[in-house]
Image 1 (cartoon, rainbow, N blue to C red):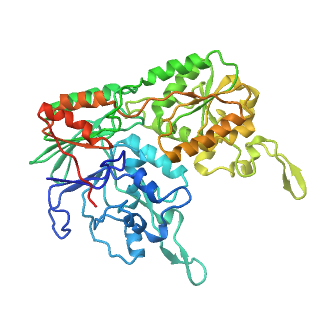
Image 2: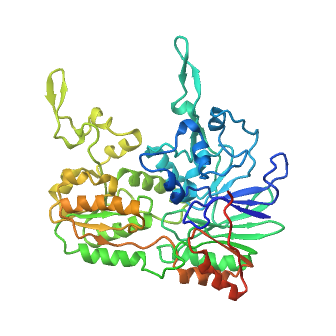
Image 3: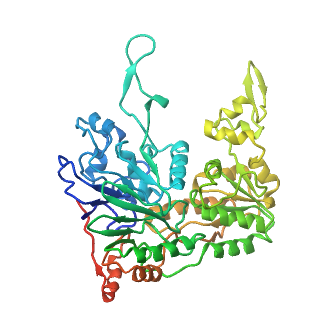
Length: 510
């Protein structure tokens, strides 16, 4: 058994850990048994070279990423279209047996985009739903996690001579997505694997047990003990101790920090702030953090208000609702009277019923049910226009005290339409921790100042366990060897040597 770390070492995120029971450097062998634990993006390393306006080029396949060490140089794992476009031959079969995805955050999943479609990606159903929503509703260049779209392919024109680029459904190739069920062991080429639910800041988060004849490995993924699913993490610790691991791979994002409250604390604090407020309450929380959505949904009920979410979150809730018989967690239903979908003006702004369009020299306003209005929104979004539980800025402007408006950084321009007076702003995200984030947040503060929403109210709890919780967890599980990952403070784990645990500082494979 060998562990090779291609990310997640001396950094937070970027996990790409190869667990190998043979020599994966020799693809000619037929008995290789190897798995990746996550295949995520390193935000810190990518930020060293790229930014919002300087991005890797799709025309260069994977080579821009390989140039700066963002993707490992491993043969037989990358998608054929990217390789052949750059004159690189691909292997007939993949040289790894799969990827075990811990959860759907980009620092664990984003670079799956570059992998072959025939490498199985194992994940919980909630992660599949979240990634599917992000893929279908997003516009980023490198986000093909659930489906791969053939690039650089041409087909003969249906009429006339010549070729046209392959696109649409014809270019779509579903990846080999394997849904894993909690506490239901399965085998992959000599490994027995079990997915263990843990508490984190989005649904479907999973730790993994891996076992073969040589080793028993525990991989925590990202974990915390202060969310609405704390019981998941508590049970994981008990079961991991029974598993008697020889190796533990443990995240340490907050190894040098103490506890800073719970989701329930945010609910109480936000309720007390909003209950006597007479104007619009505006809150920003992560789109995938459905624990936080439940928090502000509860706040809305506690304060006789309605939570207005965007259509991406509504789409996510709809898909989760369809799986409610198989998923343990229950989330708000869009038919609930305390939740609505906010629709912004798009394209020509026709949904507002205030803008005229010209038909044969006849200027008129269209009804929101008109097909021309619906065409201003993508197909996945139009279904919400068929329902009665959507609102526009006119509703927030008319009855601001009736709503809690979820508004992220990309939706701040909605404030121009809403024109909030006597509003309050709750920042329910992590505070800026580097220069780039500070610059971005300074821009946010300019918006808040313009609309008299300062001072803002920070209310956030982390998606990661505190240092004392991490140390206590490891002592209870008591592995023979510990590999600290997903941390910039590996040395803080050395205290566990006094407990007889061998603490190994992993080295990043160049």
